[in-house]
Length: 255
Length: 226
Image (cartoon, rainbow over the protein chains, first blue to last red):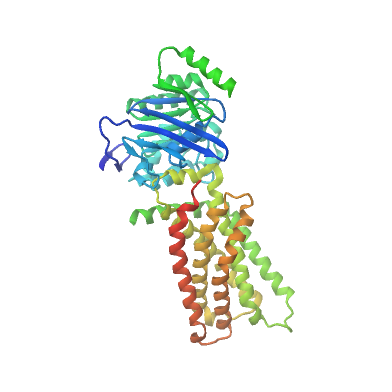
């Protein structure tokens, strides 16, 4: 294990040793069933540090299930997820520390203020100065003036920004985003795009699930179309964005 | 170990703060307690059964059901916005999660009991002062036992269709031992019987607590599998 000191968030973290050649995130033969429904069917891809995969697909294609398996919230029936060449073990706290998830749900407590929510998570992640970390995260999403307001009083867009602050609080290596632009106004969406661009420049790896093909294509280095649990196509993004739009339209029409 | 306790404390403090802000479960438990005590008090015939004979059963019926009301809220509040995912994603250990939830439940049930006990003394005219230290020991041990089991069952029941009813069904068989032991000891205490007569019940209760706190801590993580 090597230790990374991150002065920006004031914490010391243990992460697994990674070989220079190993992909930052590698998924092989991922399969997941819910009863008779096959939510994931042999999903495979690999991403290097700083790469981002946008996954498009119709409703019920298994995109959210994919993110939940990558986050370690769901156990796959078969297949593996590896971070930096090391296989994901859900009971390993160091592995869970590598991932940040922005989900459909905010994962926040309405009865706590924005600062209290972030301080709670900062304590769970063992950050050295929870209050300072919470203040930095709030500033990062432009909510510094609303820190003492209960999360339950926030608009949908503000909740989404607070959820983003929560997901980034511990400075994760791999970011999983499920419809991150949902509910955001134009300004907030622009701020998030800027933030994600910055994270990509810092060589964070991202998997983004979205129905917004333009946002997804703008942020992605790789693109996948998921239909009925399987990747119908996956690969590095090329210049022909119209072809992706056509394939996505076809997939949603079939789905 | 330090980080486990730190994480457990963070979870317990968060739960207590949320309950303090909403007070919904606490007020429900208190109203329930006052109603049960009042109904038992006015429904009994003092010429047929003395209050000292009836009091131990009433006390433990009240504590048990008021406690279950509190146990229900432990994981229900994690369903809001799927906050449970946030807990499971974090590096906090499942042991810390269980200990934190158990600690918060102990504080909740303890607070309800602290208010219910004087009410009980008032309604049933039971002189508590002479037996208070021993009674507090009995209450503490019984509460630890049923909260330890109840917290585990609450995590299992929360995702079922009839969560609140399911918790009762799951937890009641496990309540038989601590509640029976506690009621027996309370009866002996109110009758001013010597320690030797209730020492065996005390040992049983202590053994129950140790067994179930260890067992529940070990199996808790399996209840969170999706």
